[in-house]
Image (cartoon, rainbow, N blue to C red; front, side, top):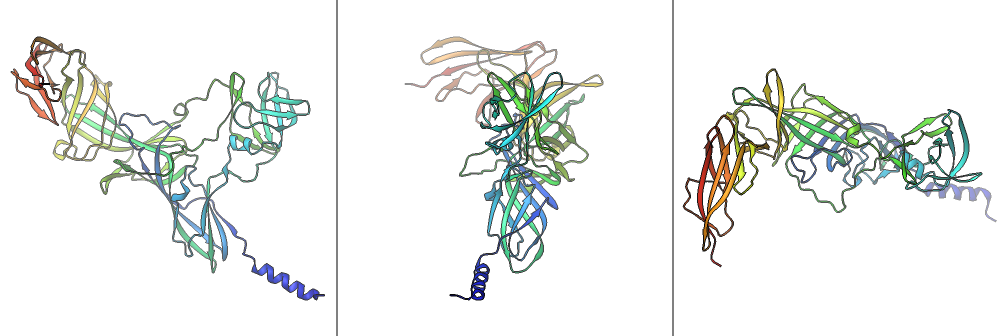
Length: 505
């Protein structure tokens, strides 16, 4: 028989041979953070940012000071973006490297709270129309999609499908649910050390765009002001962040499709009626989901959010390879589920040319266009990110909106054209005055009902293989297009005649 002491020593030796358990260390928030926001790929200049569907992304860089214990440890970084791509996370300045990294658990939300309580006891709290309140124990028997079916002593019931207003009281938060998105890493160190690390990662659920305000001046020039509109649909707010946006088309390929971060909301279908449950609240007797209000549908996200505007200083433009980076000069909070605007451009008395344009065809719509030269000597000379443009004109002491358009990304020294509205005072008509073998004679008439002359540019480019003969006015060639450029007198008209000859078959 083996001596008891020898057996005890063997057990101790076996325990010593087991791997040490990882010690938990939590970093609740970053010391500082920088957020660089990239536009949604292939975003159109005249789009509207929709907080419920942002398809841009951000590079988030955080500084965090942590104490790394001796041996194996799990370092938990709380408060990262919910839309984080964990595979993109890099932790720099760790003295002993990273063993592995994980995006921890589920985020606490009405939906996850309900889903993780399936088959568990809860309490139904009912409030009658006369104000009386009753409670009864129940067990959740259905998933989060469809009706909320619970089992009581009396049988199965559908929550909030009667004359009472119902709430679900949860006895506790199920294990694994976290109130903050958390990224964890495992480390192994020969000694305890206190270090400052840099955590960088990409996250979905962000976007930005430029918004221009152009004001026509009495002297015929234009004042141009632009905002950077920052959008964050994530549950995480980045407080006093160094904020930047990147203009230009950045190619990003991913092996997995874009996934919009879930908002965690919970909606139940009570047969033909929809009900929505509000955010859970913590109470002494557990977690309480407040009464689910009867409603046809949730309100649009944009209608619920507030736009925060700060224009005391203007964002600085910097080079970033072939891209352009705009840096917000002061720390700014990129708040959760919100839009914020920061001043970007402010230029006065920019020379502008107003003209009218149309394709030369029967019934073509004439558009009013503003043309600017993006040159320093013309009052600009800076990169212009794509975005929408609102154009105002003075009327007495007020300003009135006279049109809206958009501008694409424009580099320095490029020409900028902004179509702002239809021009019903300018009409164009194209008529056939004769035809023959492979030929058609055309007469184009443009009329001006304004009490002042206007510049008109008509696109008279022909189909491939067609040739133009007997043109009554000189045409101009621009960007591969044939243009008829003419000044149409006040309350007058101008005409162009030409022959269109088709190719031989």
